[in-house]
Amino acid sequence: MRPLKALKLVVAVATFLRRCDLFRHTAILRKSARHRSPTHRSAAPPARCFRRLDKAGSVSVEIAIATAIRTIVADVARRSAERQDCGKVPMNQHAILLAIGSDRPGLVDEVARFVFERGGNIEDSRMVNLRGQFAMIVLIGGDSRAIGRIDAELSGLRQNTGLHAELREALPSAPAAAGPAIPYRLTATALDQPGLVHRLAHVLRSAGANIESMDTRLIAAPMSGTPLFEMDVLMSLPASTPIAQVRSDLARLCNELNVDFQLAAATP
Image (cartoon, rainbow, N blue to C red; front, side, top):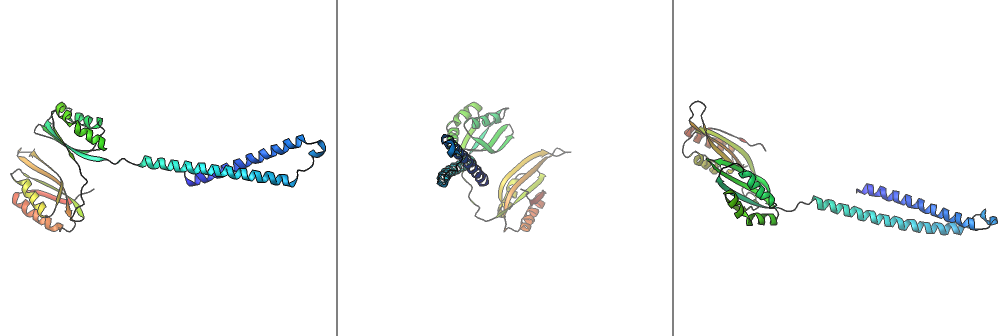
């Protein structure tokens, strides 16, 4: 209940109680008049009677209003506490589930059901089929009881699914010591050759880049069917790193290896 609504309710209650009190006093006066003799019925009641009734009525109304205000304030405080309790989100713990095994239909459903039935929630995941081996890395959120239950019953998941599964604690990421960073995306395409990932990653490391994610794959060239290597890298570069120098170093290496590349700021 908002303060303005509470105030309006207090005024309404006070008005109602005062009217009820005046009606009660009017009934008392009429009843008293009926019991008096006919010669005294037309006589006006003494002024002190009105003062006494008015004083008693004022006290009664003031007590009623004070009680109503206390009730309303208590109700407002209770509702506010309930809203705060409803707005609170239980503090979650996190763990990372690593699993790999022979690919078959239904694996994702079985792992997701295992996590859900034990009170966990899949918040982020990466899954891929690599030459018949299905690998997944899953970030699980939940309270300590849910995480503990998933860890304790992980052997059942291994037995039922045939996956090699492991659960690791996910600690909060520490702030970067190098200061603010800018996200960039690097894409590259080339004829497949040994060492491409290593040599490109080495240039990025020399520039101080932190690779957040990397996807690579081999595809067949449209006409010849020759294996083509594709890379998609999401990384963060320190704000103090000259981006022109990074482009120059990448261009020199890519010219040597005959790699087409693009480096651009990543959109959120």
